[in-house]
Length: 223
Ligand SMILES: Cc1cc2nc3c(=O)[nH]c(=O)nc-3n(C[C@H](O)[C@H](O)[C@H](O)COP(=O)(O)OP(=O)(O)OC[C@H]3O[C@@H](n4cnc5c(N)ncnc54)[C@H](O)[C@@H]3O)c2cc1C
Image (cartoon, rainbow, N blue to C red; front, top):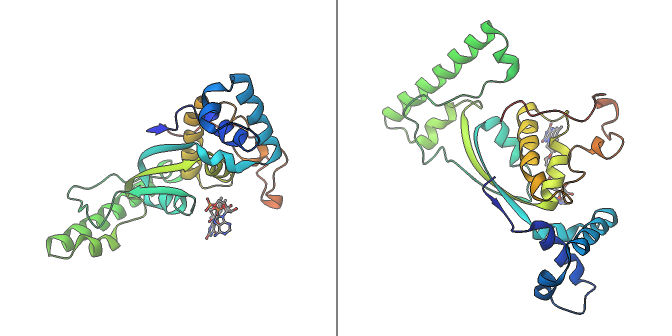
């Protein structure tokens, strides 16, 4: 995590309380007791007054993830992103490729995976060296290619992201990311993130016949 709104729970509670207060938000920011903040947060979370959650946001720097994962991540439209560009960054040395656990576990498959990724990268280099712009040569780069991305989400969007991506039905790499982000966010605002995570943390699974049937808790595979 790079940073987040200072005192995120107070920021959210003040915005929500303002709707019913005769004084301004600056006065509430200073004057609300911690107990009053927690009471307002309980009301927000149970009443569905979720717009107040948009006043606190979190920014994460994510490195060492695949393009396959970030392609899924950026489908979350209510977040802000900046990602290392394959147009403006021309890779000279063979980059890191993210290897899925299913591939890591089988030495034969792993060696085929490594060879194919290296071949694709070698072809990319040949094109760049023959004068093809990086933005065109990159068409050869695999989905496994490592990338870096900065993500900013407000708490409302984060809770939605955690709901769908901490679920075991989500693809392993984005699930690992969501679990790692939740582990970082939770201690900063325990009331806001108290029930955060896949929907089965709060009630019955909505996945119907796709249900995994496993208990909710799962540790992230990687840091
Ligand atoms: C297990 C899983 C499997 C998936 N499989 C596929 C797949 O096979 N193919 C595929 O294309 N995608 C797939 N997706 C991606 C999925 O369809 C969504 O694009 C992605 O999860 C982003 O979700 P979202 O639109 O709810 O979230 P966000 O874009 O983060 O939006 C948050 C919420 O804001 C509201 N919202 C946002 N934009 C609008 C809008 N324009 N109009 C109205 N309301 C809006 C909605 O309530 C939305 O839930 C999969 C996702 C998961 C978790």
